[in-house]
Image (cartoon, rainbow, N blue to C red):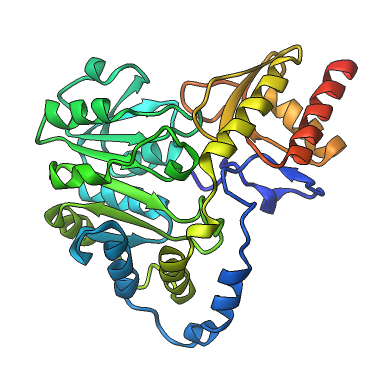
Length: 339
C-alpha cells in the first residue's frame, strides 16, 4: 500500500496547524541528534555498510543479544516484507483491524491468509504457520498480554510469531516480549525507531530473533538498504537518546483526558486505547470530515476506513499538546454546529 497511510502531508495542498494523523512522537528535543548528524554529513559521500553492521552491533548491545540476532531494515515496513518473502506461501494468521502492510506483504508473496478479530489468544486457530500481531496494536491501541503471547508461542512450536513493537514506548501497560527470545526460537520482534524517536524520514528499524531465523530472513535482504545517516542516527539514539523517549505514563494520562472530552461531543465516540493514539467512531462520513477539518481548521486526522474491519465512520488520532488538542476539539464542536 504505497498510499493510504496516516501522514499524507506530501499529497496535501493546505496549511496543517495540527497533525493528528501520525503516531510519531514530536515533542522531544531533537537538537542533539541534529547537531550529531551535522558531524556525520561526509558519510553520504561513501557507500554505507551493506548490512548496517555497526548499527546491528549497537542494537545487539542495547538488548543484550548478539549481532547475529539482529537484522536492520529501511524502517519496520521493509522487515515485514522480508519476513513475508522468507515464508512465501505460508498459511498466515492476521488480526483485524491492524497495520495494512502485514496483509499487503503477505499477499505479495502468496500467503494463504486467515483474518481474525481481536479475541483472546485461546480462541485463535492453531493450524497457521505464521502469525503477525502488533503490540500495542495499530490502530486501536489494544495490548497483548505476556500470557496471551506465551499461549500463541506454546500452542504450536513450529509456528512463527512476529510481534510488531513499533509503539511499545507509547503504552506504559505493555510489556516487551524481548525477554521471551531466550525461551522461544519461533519468536520474531520488530522494532521501529521512527515513531518513538521522531525520525520517520530516515527510515530505520530492526528485527530481533533466533540466529537461524534471522539468517534465513536476511537471505532475502539487499545491500545498503539502510543509508549512512540512518546508521549513524540509530547508533546515536540507542546510545544517547533515552531523553528523547516519551514519558508514556504522562502521555497516556493526557490521552485519557483528551478522549474523555471528545466523548462529551455529540456524534463522536472514542474507543478505549492503552496508547497515545486511539480510534473514534462518528456518525459522519470520515472522508468528508477529514477534508472539512483540513480546509477549515488546518487539522489533519487519519481516515481509518482502509483498515480491514473498519469502515468510513472511524478515524484515528494521536494525542498532541493541550493547545493542539483544543484546536481539534473546537473544530469538532463547530462541525456539530454547522452540520
